[in-house]
Image (cartoon, rainbow, N blue to C red; front, side):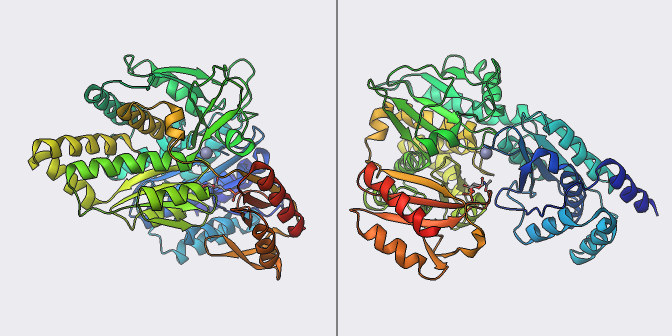
Length: 531
Ligand code: 16G
Ligand code: ZN
């Protein structure tokens, strides 16, 4: 049959060259780029099958390894509503990625049967990639996979991960926007400019923003956006990939958050706020240096609290009292942020396992769900009920109510609800800081972070560690949790947990306590207990 030819082609063009087992993890497949070509080709096949199971709706494929260094790459699939691939398909993806070339045909046929795909339907797949030099070759393998099963690929070239998610969503739901990069700019930047007309700059807010682009795609896109901002925001961009700057190397959101150090390549001006993006533009943290060059970090927890408190203020102004808002965090959320949210903001908090899909899912249970990982990945999602209620007030409310509701509508337009988005989040943060006339120092003054430390531990088998309670406690190996409890108990405000990484073959340790010294010690002691 013609499919025979397809598999012969795969063996020729994208042969499986490695026997290393590879798993579809929290962020898809991710490993050394040279081990990925056959995996990406096969994900092209799977994307077509997925599209047909979804009645021909468009599926996304993103070629990226996010904040990893240049030699790595990865691929993940995006479901029709712009969300992460449904969890039950992760095992199917893993199976297809690991079969031998000889078994590729029979395994593909099995999967088609298992998921009951009607292979006579049309299939559409949007493909995006980050700036890695290995990405074009992998994107071509993805396209070949899509074409092999007679699907239609559309390559978007270099885009941020969230732009691809956005385009997939728009293609399947045209009320959300236009499925192009330009459509994305029009909606998000357009909403920002509209809101700036209504909220003039005042107070301690300064329109100059420095940006650390991690030498990746996010900075490049901000460089396009910058020219259309009409002075509403003066973006000074660093780490755009030129001048020998290496992707994510000693820069970018992950480096800044984990090392708590300033990135290389960014001009240093005391008290100037800096937004730091990760390599594929889906994470954002802020920081500033004081006059003694101490770094002050404003991470995902800060962004979440800033956005949630402003949305709460507008909901109150709109008198949309029947809409509930909640915040979703992970075990990595600083304890001080959780306390601030529940006690000061009086917003309910849910804690879930690491990984965007878990946060997104939990956020869906609120009318308005704000979710952020401490590492800077997050967004806000609004239910249909919330959107309808707000739109109605914006139309029929009293003048003061209408004002708040209209600002909320602009915020909704500025938000990429499909997934955490550094560019969209940056405009949201800048909107709130401007609306409140805040300097980054004042933003940071809302609460004091507990000092914390993260460590990586290499162990024989990371899966020997099993966790429960949203990864805050472990159930195996025996005795480990008791040891962690005993160690944390020695320190004031001590808290620690241990979890196997979903993206690297290591175990992660997190500790916080009332001083940096204590947090560092606690982390080291817990790491010792893991060995
Ligand atoms: C992935 C996740 C991120 C999570 C990180 C944890 C997505 C899109 N990305 O990058 O949310 O924080 O993994 O990595 O879900 P770890 O399991 O190695 O700590
Ligand atoms: Zn990323």
